[in-house]
Each structure stands twice: as structure tokens, then as C-alpha cells.
Length: 85
Image (cartoon, rainbow, N blue to C red; front, side, top):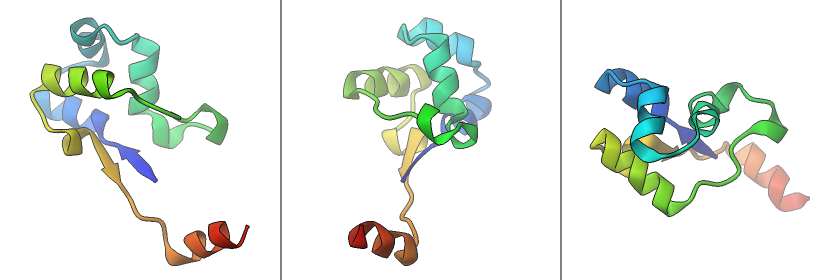
């Protein structure tokens, strides 16, 4: 599972979602979706993000990709269930 850490980066840098939207040209609703991804219903979660957009976000925030997103390994139980289905 991919975890978005954009809220933490914005807070640490003292920046807002609106500021990031203006700096990157990414729609405010899209940035809000990334920031709130963990709280969204399954059908409304982020499904993709382009490499160009990720690069723009990292450049604007002067951070690394791993500061913004993280791969969180699912438990073995969940992986087993996915493999069996």
C-alpha cells in the first residue's frame, strides 16, 4: 500500500495545500485528496499520480520522493488472501 505523507511535509515546511497548488499547477482538490487519502472511502482514494506531478511537488517543497510517499508493506495475512483470490 502506498502512504501519502504530504500533510506532514507541508506542515514541516510551513506551507499550505493552496500554496502547493499555486506552485505546481496541480488542482487544489487533487492535493486535498493526496493529503486526506487515508481518511477517504476506498473508491475515492488516489489511484495514480504521474511522475511529472510528483517531480513538481518535490521540487516545490524541496524534498525527496520518499518524503512525500512511502511503500507500506501489508501484513502476510493480507498478502496471502490476495494471492489465494
